[in-house]
Image (cartoon, rainbow, N blue to C red; front, side, top):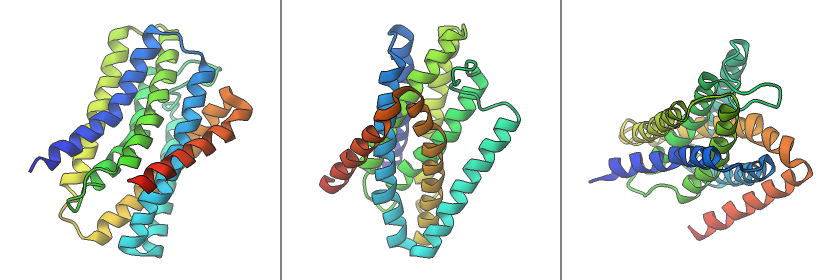
Length: 243
């Protein structure tokens, strides 16, 4: 009866990890090496959850070729939107040590990363099953360091706390609405449609991990990045097996 509320709550929890990361970064000076370590671990968790939950479920629902098609389309869309935003100079959300990310760029980047994640959370509840625990944990772990890293850049750039917390609060709300949309709009659609959209979102999420999370983690954690990604992957595999 209240599944729609659970879907929105899952999205809010996932997006709220960005807000919590922002709170921590604003009041505590967390060394970037630790932030990068959490980001690398979260990347491994997310990759594992994509492989065993999203892609595996899509193959079971619609077969191999529709899954491959959706996955490829999602990755292509994500990459070309990034190219367009880079061309417009609107995606510099974290900064790379060259210059701090802008407020608008950070918001655009976080939304671009977060919408597929939240959409999948809502989709995971279609059919009467509860929210996918491995996906929820993976998204929370990956969002927390993004909130940390981005807020540190905003603080360095002289942004006010009001601006920062309204920004992340709005993105958390957008994540809740995306998860709710994934559940309500697609709940009555055929399994072929939901399977294709799941694989499409998974492709976008993997492109995001490769484009933002792992490079950012390696920039600060260096040689430990591969090990932390591996540990994250194995942790998610254990969660998937138990769940």
